[in-house]
Length: 63
Image (cartoon, rainbow, N blue to C red; front, side, top):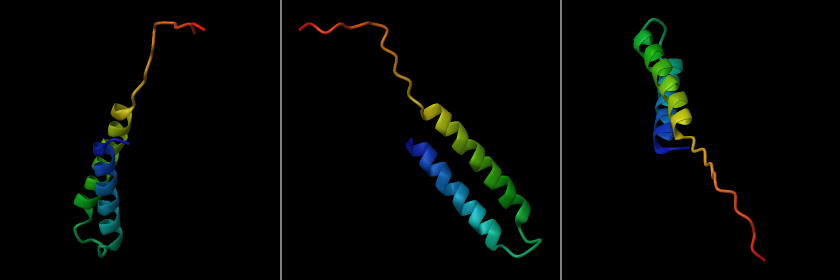
């Protein structure tokens, strides 16, 4: 995982935990929005961090 993915994972976990621990009807909407936003950014960072290596040159072993 990239640094951005780890950062967004930690932020998602912190927002979700604080939402879970918050009293009912107190500051919940911004925490829900933050959890969803950070979760979406985490998924995007995972997709952006994938490195696909393609070697178009076919190499033969010269023994």
